[in-house]
Length: 72
Image: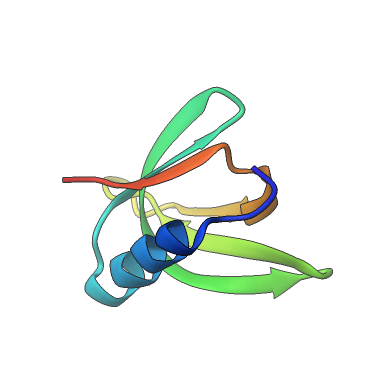
């Protein structure tokens, strides 16, 4: 997915503000995570998240995501 749509950015921003879960799909795997913030590294946007059960930090490059949706 080269870039998120406006609707997907809105969904992501709301989920960050409210602490809601989202589902992200990358390379045929789906991850349900709690987004914390959007960051930048080496000119690329990153989605910094936490796993809802373990609390592990997961970082996704936004340009590598295949899909992003709100859960629930």
